[in-house]
Image (cartoon, rainbow, N blue to C red; front, side, top):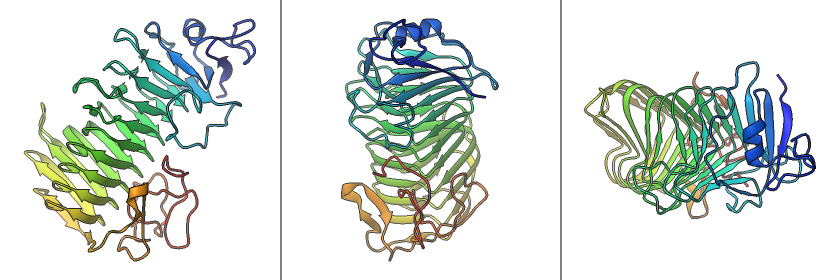
Length: 368
C-alpha cells in the first residue's frame, strides 16, 4: 500500500495543511491531524518538544503510519550512514529538554526512517510501546548525565519490532539499553553504553557492539537468541552473557560467524540457566577470560587469532585482513536474512559492495 504523503518543517508554512513542504505542518500540527495511512516527511532541523506527543494514530497492515526524515528532497537520506553529527543539519533531530516531555507511540504498524531522537533529561526521547514496527536508519543519542535505570534514548516494548541500520549511542554516559519483547537488529551500531539487555526472542545480524563499559549483550528470561555475523569490540566484562533474571532463563542460542575482539571478560558466558548453545565458526582475539564459559551443548570451529585481524580498529575499520582465519570464511546458514554468500568474512559486513573473496553486499552505518 502507498502512503498518503504529508510534510513537516520546524515552523510549518503556507496553509499549514501538510500537503506540501510549502504548506507544511509543524510537528505539533502533525500530531493533531495525522491519520492512519499517512506518512509525514520531516525536513532536517531541530524539533524540541514542548509537550509530550502521544496518542499517535494506530496503523494496520493495510494502512500503516510512517515518519520519514529528509534533508533537502524526499529520499535523500535513504542510503546515508547514521553516524553524522547530531545537530539537526543532516537529518531531523527530535529532542527532549524537559523531563515531562517525550515522543510517545503506542500504536502498531509504524515505520520510522532517517530520524535522530536525542534525550537530554535522563529519560527516553522516544518511547515506542508498540508492536509490528520498523525503524530504518534512525539514530538514538543518550543524555550523558542520565540515570542508570533510564534507557539511553529509545524504550521499546511489546513484540515484533525490527531495527535496520540504526545507531544507538550512549554518549559516554552511565546508561544501558534495554529491549523488551521480540526484536530483530540488522546492520546496527551500538556504542558507548554500559551494556545491552534483552529478553524473549532476539536476533542480531551484521551488528557492531563496541566500547561498552560493563558488558556487551546480556540476555535473560525465556526465549531464543540468534547472533549471526556480528562484531564485539573493546568490551569491558563479558561480551555475551546469558543469565538468570526474574524468570528462569530457558531457551536456545545460535551464535555463528561472530568476531570477539578485545574482551576483558569471557567472550560467551552462561550462568544459572538452561539455555542450549550452538556456537559455530566464531573468531576470538585478545580475550582475557575464556572463549566459552559454562556453555552447554555444541561449541565448534572456533577461530583463534595470534595477531590482530582488524584492518584499522583505531579508525573504526573492523573489516578483516586477508591473512585472518575468518577472511572469506563465514559459513552459510538458514538464518541469514541479509547475505547467504559463503565468501563473506566472519563478523559484521562494512562494505557497500562484495569483493571476490570477502566483504558483503549490504550497507552498514559505519560505511562511508
